[in-house]
Figure 1 (cartoon, helix red, strand yellow):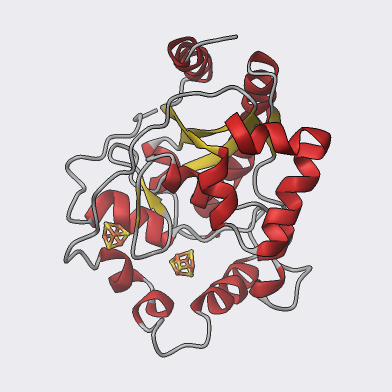
Figure 2 (cartoon, protein in one colour):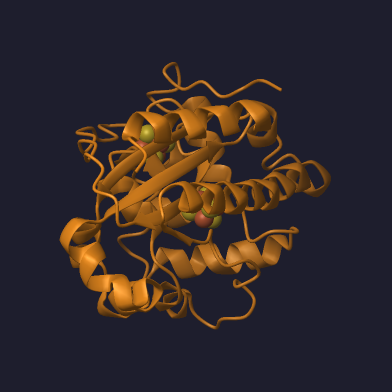
Amino acid sequence: MISKVELVKIIESNCQDLRRNGDTKTTTFTSVYKSLMPSQQHKLEELCGTHFQKFLEDGSIISLALAYSEAEILAIDQGKKKWEIYAEAYNKLNNELKILSEKVAIATQGIPILPTIDGIVGKISHVQEYFPMTISHRLIGEFAGMGWRGKNNLIIHPKFSCAFRFVSVLTPLNFPSDPLLDQTCEDCTACFNICSFLKKQSKLNDYRENCRKYIRHLDLSADVCGKCIKACYFTSKFNESFQLTTR
Ligand code: SF4
Ligand code: SF4
C-alpha cells in the first residue's frame, strides 16, 4: 500500500515530465458520495461495482489537478485563431489527466473517473441534461480542499486561480483527508465584469444554459470559453498570489 507522501511524489514527478504545475488532495469517499445528486450517486455505485461497500466504509477519493500555462490563458478572447490555443490546451490537459489518473489508479488499486465528457455542448438541448451524465470533479476538488468555490462556480486554487483542470480517482485505500479551504472571493467581481451571464445570474433561469449557448456559438475545437478564468487569473483581487508557468 502506498502512502500519501508517495502519492504526492508520483504526481510531482509526472508534473515535472509534463512541464506543468499540478496538485493532489484527498478526501473521504463517504463525504463526496453523500453530497452528490441521486443520479450521480448511482453513477458512483456503478463505477465501484461489487467493491462499493468497501469504498463506502474506508475508501478515499484523490483529486488531481493540472494547470494551464500563462500563455494558454492569455490566448483567451484574443480572436478565434488565438483562442484556439486555449481550446487545444483544454483538450491536451484532458488527455494528460486521463493518462495521469490511470497511472494513479494502478498505484492505488483504484478506479479513475475520467475528465469531462467532450463534445457534449452541441448534443444536449439544455445544460441540465449534462449533470446526471457525470460525477462532479469540482465537488470532489472542493471537498478535498483543492480550492474555494468561486463566484464563477469554478474552484479557485490558491496558486493556479481557476486555470486548471481536474480528474479524480476512487481508491479503497484510506488516505488522510486534506482540510477544506476556508476562503471566499470576498468583494472581488472581476469575473462578473467580464461576463453578463454571471453578473445577471440571479435574474436568469439558469445562467449555465446561457453559457452553454455562448460556448456553442464560439465553435472552438473544445467546449470552452474561458473568459471568466482569464479575468480571475489576471485581474481578480487575488491575482498577485496566482502563479502559472510562463512557457
Ligand atoms: S465560460 Fe464564458 S460564458 Fe461561461 S460563465 Fe465564464 S465567461 Fe461566462
Ligand atoms: S474573479 Fe474574483 S469573484 Fe470571480 S471567481 Fe475569481 S476571485 Fe472569485
